Image (tube, rainbow, N blue to C red; front, side):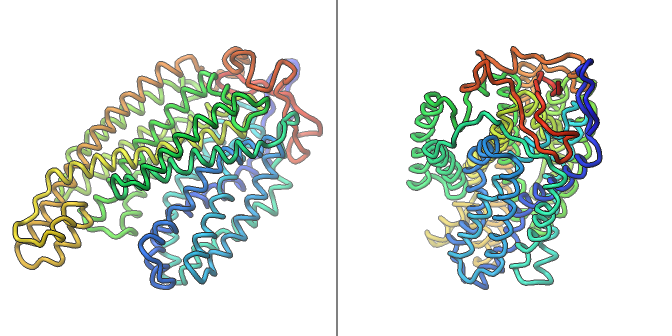
Length: 563
């Protein structure tokens, strides 16, 4: 890293070591995404080998995401306290051990436990990497590029998960999908101490374990309950879980307000750019989670594609998001992020309108065309939201800010899956026509869900089975249309929120010239527990920092400058 121009206040520019460190950190980011999607292909193999029941299969696939969502806040704050690189490397080591445990599991309980441990380790990645990127790339232009590369690694994981998983499962036992982690995390463990600088808040206090338990009690039941509602409809266990989360959440908030050094600094939400971006991220995750679920079910159960075929078709919109997202990141240097996000949201809303024209028969090309528009329109928020969150948060709270960004996305996705999934199911049940004469139990199964109707149609011979299948597919396509209309309205609302909440944020390229804007960055006298004596100093190690000793950082609404 070159030395900053002290007289002009120009930020230091990253060198080859920082870019190499970014590449090394993008690999585990990609891997944690791959581990979410690859399990869907492996479940039939796991079930055949270990004899997993239907409930056990659900836990094998879901517990990883549950644990990531639950531990993001804790891991982000822990990185602020003991060091972000240290937390990242500890998570990598645990990830390797848990992957080996999962690969050679001899029972479903062993595999579920290993997947839970993988989720805890995976929760260290996003908040630590986001905070480290902020420290390694203080120049606003370079930070924007780095955030774009990091966001692309997430989408690459979405693309590669089913593809790589399909190739591995075709040639090796199912345990091979977990062994991918060994070389990836091993490379991080070997190279990060030399390429990635350590950083933390030197004035941070001790971790409050009561707050950790309360955060888990708030997040885990809520995410679990929402997903179960989407999967099985209204039932006592998911409703009870949501109520438990709703009880723990206000208790957690009350405790954070009372602590001098809280687990989650609630005054971060007083940063206008950060709170506005968080709202946008949650709305976007809501739409993409719900429509992604309905579109995937449409491709499999209406169009008759295999999960591997679905993954290949989804490569097209995913690649579009990567390309357009990086273009948006570059454009944000000259154009205010609010305008890029709002314009993209309008394009995504138009794509949702296209999805309302999808037919049950031969609707694949229209569906993919609509999704390309949606992914292209949503790409600015995927690239710019992490950048806006990290550059608007105080440096000493970078890990907490990164965890908020990721937790908001996880919660938004779960909420979207539940709400839009239930909407699609309600439309399906209202319009499916079950032929007369079927046994009551069989008819109830067909009315319950499209998957139930597909199984029932296979058991009903002749014309009745064909009519049931055609009616069920038409009814589910109607559900897709309704969810797309809801999503279009949400995208238009997202555009309005972007213009109202982020219009004051300058282009990222103008952040250096604009200078720090302390009033927006530190509302109400600064975050809880910081006080006037906290200057935002970030402790950095020697790796790639350009010299020993701390660097004092102050942020504006659009970037970070090192003084």
